[in-house]
Image (cartoon, rainbow, N blue to C red):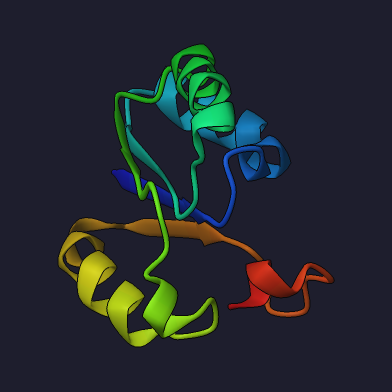
Length: 103
């Protein structure tokens, strides 16, 4: 099974780390994506992916300033090609109190 976790920030994987580690242990392909990684958090992001055993990871190093944080069109065009191969998508809940997670 192909599992994709699509998260806003590099430390957001903590809410599903156990689930991701279990899928890895069961032999599933797990892809962990984050939309924002700055230089400060990049090392922690890489270590987290290694600790979870995530073989495939993608990171966006910056946001297109002209689109602003709430624009979804660029994200959809960027992420859409990977999603058809996904059997299970894990992401933030709709009513998440963090407004950047809702977007």
